[in-house]
Length: 47
View (cartoon, one colour):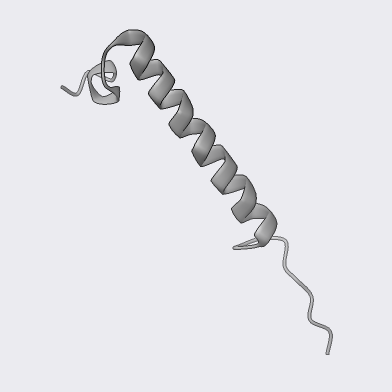
C-alpha cells in the first residue's frame, strides 16, 4: 500500500503557515497597542 499524505489537516505546510500568520498577528497587535496607547481590549471597547 502507498502512504499518501492528505492535503487537509495537520500537515507540515499548514502548520508552518499557521505559525507564521500567528506571529504576524501578534506583531501587528503589539504595534497597534504602541501606536494608540490602548490595549487590545480597550480598542475593542471591552474595558
